[in-house]
Length: 312
Image 1 (tube, helix red, strand yellow):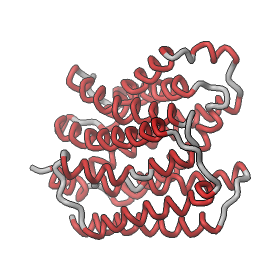
Image 2 (cartoon, rainbow, N blue to C red):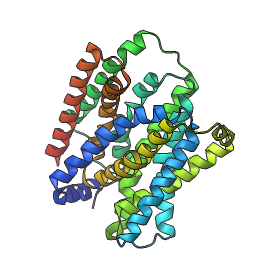
Image 3 (cartoon, rainbow, N blue to C red):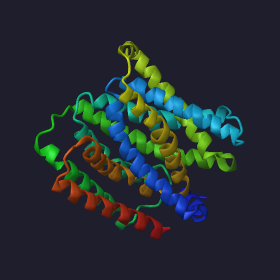
């Protein structure tokens, strides 16, 4: 059975309402985490913030999965979780966090917007997927065009770049794409015994541990002695709950019931959500470029989702 066939069979049995709710979760919740991270790192060192975020979320999800009857993970489950956690959690979040010390977040966001391209390419080359249709490719191009429009005012003002940092964000795209493919492959390898909640918790624990060790290694621990502000603490708690437990569970489950190309559309929508939340909650301006980009990006999402569903 090919990866496409397995995914198509799973999609046929997935309730449409549940699939729609999962997409809404990764679109809106992950979009809101941009603002939450901004508040969290005001007084919380970035690697330790991310590491403790995933360690806490993973612990709660693991306990919940075990209470609901999931069998205790063995060596095979931990090996799969270590691979996905290293790619999807530790490397992706670690590289972007490091890079944003040297380049503007707008430039990082523009680079991250190419994630769907890498996912589609890796899915075809190593994931066993069929070549994407012309409509999907057009949707990807539209999504990237919408990202450029969204960030054009910032780019016009001049964004100071750092080649090494920019390459680090590109590398994070590759690790996220590889982790996305690995989620689907490892869930298929696990077969009937696969529990998405258990798998997600183990991935968070593995990736969170790697991030925490990295934070300690680079000397972030002494920075905590200054204390964490209430706003940072609340933002961290939001990142643990909806931002990690809820959104990551939805993401990993979606990868088992629909195509990576469709799931990857979150990379287009998240910055739009972030911009509007910044306008609503932080008083950041929304320009005509923002409104035009939103229309283009949402059109790209509709095109990719429609084309992916029609192809199956």
